Image: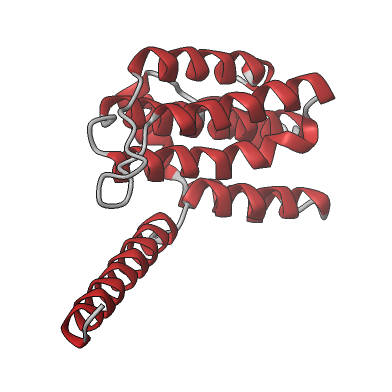
Length: 194
């Protein structure tokens, strides 16, 4: 190979690496961007319940008002009303159960979003990965069978969104039928928390 050929190969390799790292860093930053109020709020609520400090629980629940309102308006799931009653009754178990339900609703919301955006790999991937963050909160409370089913289903959902490949190599189209199947399996595995 002559000097010109080596220079072209070197430039193509550098271009490939820069594209690869740009895609990777973009995917990471996009997936990591933004806080998850339900995750942070749940942690604060559970921590306050261990004391127990119901004033702190109430403050943390109030900070989730937008999320509870969204679930009520967009998904017809009212968790705020029973949550406020549970706080009034100082019912720690009910509060924790309702926060688990909020986590399930967040998983459903992310998976619905991914299903509606299967034509956009990056958006679908971020939504499935975010749903895994929520799923991880429930895993310690699951039986080994539920845990196995949920983990297989989330991995199946991730696989079914396809892959854009690199320069077309390894490209795989999204599989909406498989995504729906994996989503149903996952929701079945976490149905005890709804």
